[in-house]
Length: 235
Image (cartoon, rainbow, N blue to C red; front, side):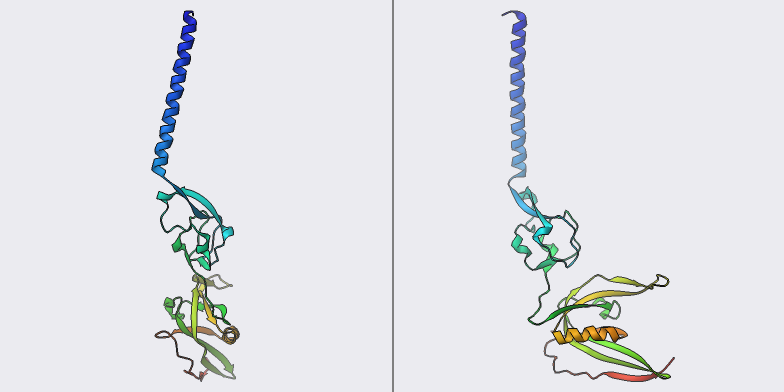
């Protein structure tokens, strides 16, 4: 073997040793990363934005594998946790679903209807109404009788159970686009008769107001409040 051949063999041996060293270093790096990351688990990620109080379904989600050590216990991993749940707030696409992002959906008793109306933010008990509370719903009316104006107030629904409160929205005047009012959508669980009555009275009333009921709001069916009306001079 001449010197040139010996140099070639030596270079091949050095290249082989270098390849073995690189392989060992890569294996060591992968092993260290695996040891640091640990076992992986499946979590659920939103594929699209979900509006507040909308139902979260399996079509809205995708499974992603992440290291278990980086996945908190509040992560939703089981699709059965979605049963009857709605988004607690507006959820952006790409968010990893956690337990605190979900709340139970509206629960209606047999025969009840879910109905929502817009309530003035100030006269609707000034933001004190919360989900699960019982409220009386009052309506006020004003009618022109010749040169006199008659006003009337009546309780149209008693002990209505609040099941959802939406976001406050600004109402603008169509003529000059100025903000005239702030309203909040509030959803109630009512009987068929009360839901029909509320729908009708909302169309005729000048103003709808809520009145919080002290205590649990139970046992009020026997309380009757007659309409209060009076005639005022027209302005």
